[in-house]
Length: 634
Image (cartoon, rainbow, N blue to C red; front, side, top):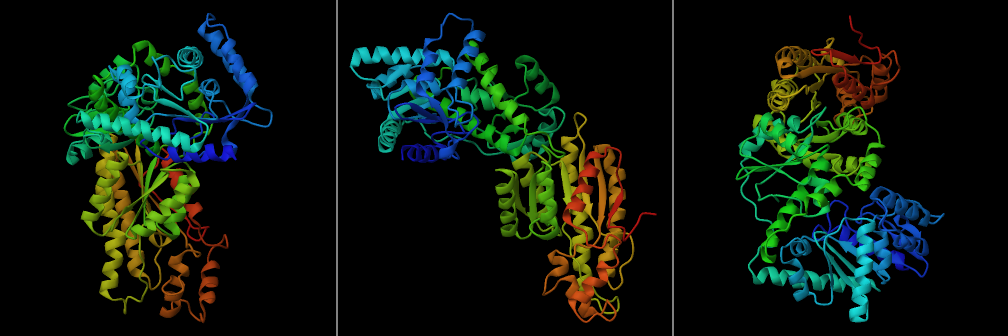
């Protein structure tokens, strides 16, 4: 089935960064009466057969009868109405603005991509001359704004080409905007693209132009010091995510529409990072920069989320590579002011933003939250709920394989870049420091640190080994101190400017509120960390950091309690902590009976308390019980 083939073609090229980035590009398939085309808001990499919008070809062709002399607003509204009417009753989705272009190209399949290798030519001063030399059978179209005007222009040029050559072109290069390739089979499409890329690669090699982006060495110390600052300087009401890149020669202007959409027309190139520099750029251009380049040190890419920041980085790399490649094509040719302003104010982009906004703002939307000990059990349960609340989750755990698997589960459930994994041993300061530094380079900083990692060794004070005492204390008490020490440094940098606040939430225990029989090491560490929470809260308030503890009741269903080999039920049974208990079930019933609510605590109970501490702007230094009434505040 041909629809199956265009889906396979779309997925193949959409997943290859050499051909398309950030879900760009467009594909279509025609029957005698129907045009199937990728709709707006759907990526080539993930589109399915059912994802293509189905259009009546005769209706689409009515676009070309629209009067070019109409005012732009009236003309675009007319075209929009025609395209909406063209959607078949048994289909849905907004047709791509490029759909009329796909209709006017006579081949069964059409694939429009934006390879950097192609745009090196299409954005070059001598692009049209090089195109005529390398691709004599192709059609070159001078830049024109996307939409109706471009479709009409291409239709006219295809007609002229046919009059001159007796046939329609199969390859159409758009100045500053990639290439359309038409074919009547998937093999033909692949063969044409392979030929295009091979000829361009040969040309770049012949003039000794590097086809991989040239980068320098990252100034790690500079990046770690400035990424958190940029989080707040480039944000509005809340910090943005920042991904740090090694230095490279960023593009100095607008090269293609895609670059404008994701990176803006201009980037900030500066030797220093300060509020005044950001303010000057914003005043000049009317927006804050998405990309900040400090030559020889680092490139900082900003977005509302890590996913957005990563997309900005990809497009910034691509723009830089395109500019690098234009050296083999007579130098770069930026889009005109009028052309870039059209893209900046394009209704299509406003539509895409409105679709994104329609998803709604959740309690922790845009927040970067790290959860130590998040690879399994209670920690992973907390991470799940915080991700559902909109936070981007960093799973930090000694078990990096488990952390990676946990992050993958969250990404599958909540979308790409919803979570990432880092290795840490919170009892080792070098490990904690490295975790925070890696987090800063990947995200720019953090908004919420959930200190969840903890251990327990139960036993009588008369019998407990000192190594077990030290183990519990090193992880639960000293580890908490080390995490706060290094996390607060980054938070203080990002909170320096504006009214930005951060949160540290320690997952304590009801054993931090009342003693625990034959469990002194654990209870002592938890009592002690409440003292740390209160002390840290008093100190860090000047850095706009709130510090609180959550004191959960028992999570009976997690591995800490239920592991059949070394869970607490087994430990307590073996240590005789529960008088008369003969089985694990006896121990479990004993502890459930202590809870007025009749059940153990669950991760969602604790996560709700965490969200409360973040949203509550007038609460710090607290130890909040979440115990089902088992332990009540005085």
